[in-house]
Image (cartoon, rainbow over all chains, first blue to last red; front, side, top):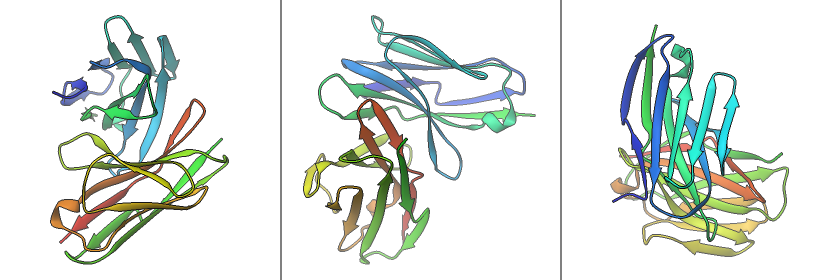
Length: 109
Length: 110
């Protein structure tokens, strides 16, 4: 069993739809990151969360520490949002990260 | 803020050939540096991490090695590549609470 589970694995949406990607983890963490990986492979860090909620443009990330769960929301989705979204948790002890396998999002015009 | 330069972006190498992937960091000093690999259909897996020059810790036994000859340089190497070494390799840097990722290298071993 992976320490970090993401759902769904694949997601196809129509442009304009509201999108939610979920992440559950089973270890004690100090922070959770949401990452975006474009088809070329480059990874961009979207959010780092240790509690509550963060918003950046059309992206919203929430975390519930007690339930060990985080969600990434995209409002008014656009084809340029098409990418793989990866959840990564930083362990409470040490500096290691555990990564989810990613959610592949395709937004259709 | 720290930035990571990782190259090359893509690489095709024959089985048995050597490998050298380089990662350099700017904008910080004495960072923790990491090499991750993402095999097809799997999440990123930590290969090596380094807390200082010449200090390398390996998380999984494998055909690869890492070196840190300078504070802001982290190198991933292999003497003889295997087909199973194919994948996406990612360098990351951590300093304080900040964590920065390189752009990655897609390696195909043929």
